[in-house]
Image (tube, rainbow over all chains, first blue to last red; front, top):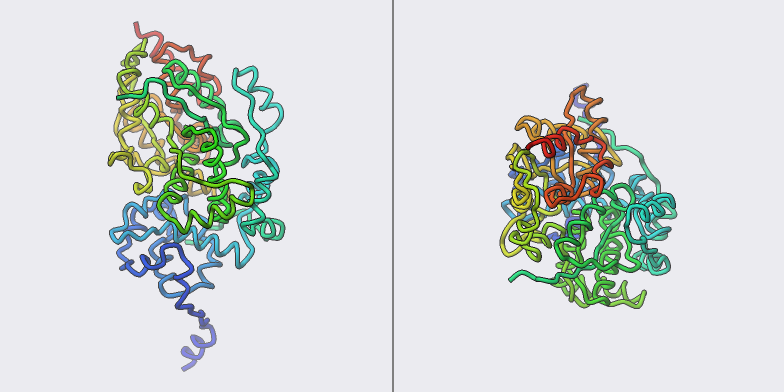
Length: 182
Length: 297
């Protein structure tokens, strides 16, 4: 009996949210997933690390394990190669589900990779995902390349504002690396 | 019928002007000779792809702003980057097909005085070369056949998948780059897992996995004795060229496989000098490759 007591004391109850899948892109299609695992079998990331497993992610969404999914660091390992989308025999767009989960995690938990915050701030400041140094802009002349246009920063800031991302980016926690746990 | 006077708005994106002007220099040279007129895109912004993982709506709005700029100019877009093509093309098709999505994004765009109407198309360099210029015209412009070299190609994910958005006239893109390479006279070798991802998009959060992916690709390319790997995407190029010395050090392996942008290879066949094509900008210097080309007689 001591063993049982130990098990119960260490058990954690995960809250299930049955309506969770409706927050995903193409929620209806997700019901068609019968867990064949073709997505994971063809996934180049899964091949090198079992920490990232799209089949498991799809199942967890079906079960409504929202809290566990949104705090799962493995979400950030999808390279968007879209092999899973083209391979799925049921037409489930697995990579888009992962994208929805990432978006939701940013929105509800206010956490994102540091690199994403940097790229977003660069776009806000310059229109480009990188701040292109003056020296490189000048080098274009010697390379015979046309002048690099400046973007309309007012319009870009407005798009950040109307999509509610300006507030997020100013007040978001970041993490640098995803530690892979096998 | 091929379009005899193709004209495109060139969408440079961010990575090419930031790190890989060699791609831009060589692409502009060959396109000019092949009669493709490029018009500079005024005040464009990032295609939106890097934002998609954190905010799909903003990313789509950023992409749509670029599409609206092209609509104002009444011109189609040509991209050099797979990421830019993949995202602008996908958002363009989603906006055309999904009325709810179009309404939502147009509501955002109305705030900056723009409205998406669905009048333009987005093409990647390899589509313009195959569909507008045509193989015949490219063949006519090859002055120096590269039949003495053997290379391999890496097309890159966002030209291939999701096929729902990348299929053109029912044809998938897996053989396009191969056919374009063979127009130069060079042999294009097959190897294992040609369509596999370079891994670059996650390098900002994890280096281990992308480096293992790139190492495997370079091993496959080396196994078939390719003298160079040919790419058409700045991200794939960075992974295989700029990062190749890091991968060699990390795994204690030696590859020394030069990675050329396709327009550099085509440019050599069209008679441009390596200097004119910014080949010296490459991290892995293609010394032996150039020796085979110029000392073949």
